[in-house]
Every structure is written in structure tokens, then in C-alpha cells.
Length: 76
Image (cartoon, rainbow, N blue to C red; front, side, top):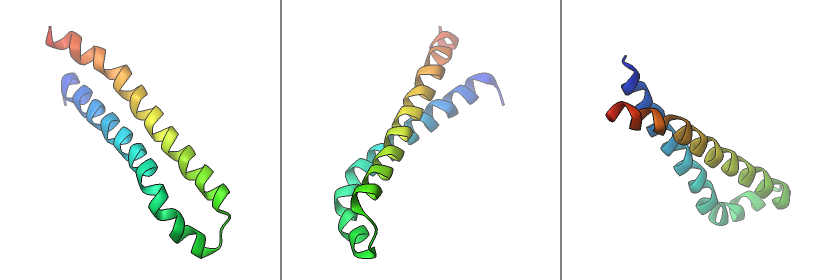
């Protein structure tokens, strides 16, 4: 696999990570009622899921930030 194709795949993967992290933030209000029925502490569960969302978004942004300049330089 050539280098340009790997870079494109890494950027697409970064976008997928950002979207997955954003999905956690949008889904949490709807899922908290179901989680509360299970009996776990809602504050701890909410904190953990939001932390996962922040890590996914941060990792995706880092992946895009690291790979986008390589793709831009190869296209010039």
C-alpha cells in the first residue's frame, strides 16, 4: 500500500473517531434513563462516558492534525 493511501485511511479513521466521540455526547441524555434503571451511580457513569467521548474526539483530532499536512504536501 502506498504512502498516500495510508494517509487517506488515517484521516478517514480520525474523522470516524471524532464522530464516535460526538455520538457519545449526543446519545448520553437518552441513555442515562436506561443506565439509572440498572442501579449504577449516574454521576460516575456519566463522567466515564463523557471522558471516553473526550478521548475519542481528542484522538481523532490529533490523527487528522498529524496526517493532513502529509496529504497536502503530496498533492502539491
